[in-house]
Length: 300
Image (cartoon, rainbow, N blue to C red):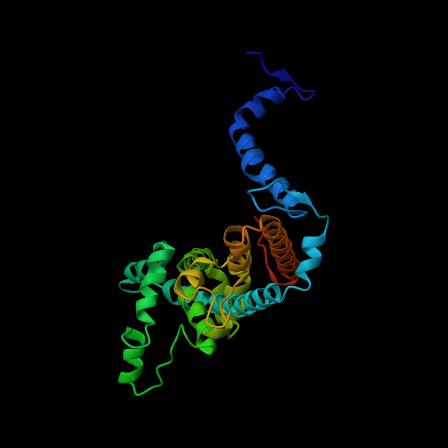
């Protein structure tokens, strides 16, 4: 093997091809599994392609058709509603739970595990469990409500409650965010709390003026992941409600899946996928723009 060549500063550097050789498995995978499918999908989005026949070039017709597709707007509206409720609610609940579990107390490891374990349960198993819990006649949730003499809704069959049910089930899996927040809270310097205490801040004041600014990078991280997850929600509503009742839980990815694998309209599905990608990138960009004023990065 050729020896490293000295630079102007006398440092030894390896040839470029040595570095490329080391990362070649990643490069091959990146090009073959990401770049090539993306380019192919972009081409198919400009065609009429049913998989069984060669694609026929249409130009931007698929994208123009989206503007007049009522199902597209229904799915987009459902996803926007879900994201608008789920992301702030899951952030607030995860922060509240993390602030409790970040304190030293008895059985804290058990409680942390209890919060995190649901996020490890396979999503199909989660859906089956909640199908039983939300059963209008025999489900544990309605039995508990009847015992308290409260109304027992038809969770998954009533259009007014179906979206709420999906959001509740999604909130059950916030353990990943809670773990991130607990780790961030444990890294907040103690002397900041002591200074805030001396300045007369109470518990809520210390949380608002010390904890939140110091863990704001973690909040941004979880919000970005929440945006990506919320705009790709699919498995739970697909299994539990199949998009119903009355399209009340018909989400964007479900519509994309139907076009690709039920209607065999791969060209239109590819156009939907690219619109979804642009939406997620745009919302993530907005989150980063807002974060410039709200996120505090401590000096290393």
